[in-house]
Length: 249
Image (cartoon, rainbow, N blue to C red):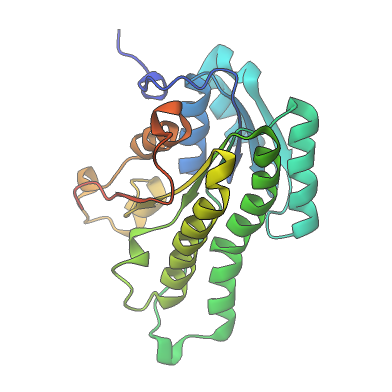
């Protein structure tokens, strides 16, 4: 009998409390499943409830769904983020891991034609939530002198920026934030790293690029296993890293 992909990693996160922000996207569901499969308690954070996605995830992970709880909060709003992190600490007694998956993509115009509203929207979607969640999560982690933060940047931060400057700048900001906070939290036994996917193999991306070589794109569950590793004790020596997960693209 084949083993479900969400059970295929061997990183022991038993007893760890993980906040997964952006949990109802395709990657968010894969990450939540991988962490539950590793023994973690997962708090799935989203700006609004997605009962169908939650039901699908619970069905996928079976008995492990007993360790899944949900929390609604607008991660762009500082008061909401502060309250959400405090609620996690109240419910679980601790916060061990944060995975920042919230983001969005908009491109198609060169800088000379780029509207300021688009530029600001890319920062608002891709950088502000990561900053706010990392800010308040680090405070909780510092109190217990242990923590793991993983941010999602993009290959576009380093390449492929043509007509996508706003998105690329926001994702480069995520890398800079990662490097800065890694230095700030080193003495508190907190690691902060970023994962840089290329085009992820999702139904939406397949529809947008129907002639692409899908088998060369990284799959969500593959990226999720990299994130599970970074949250584990096995990755204790890694902090401030930007890890490419490009697949074969």
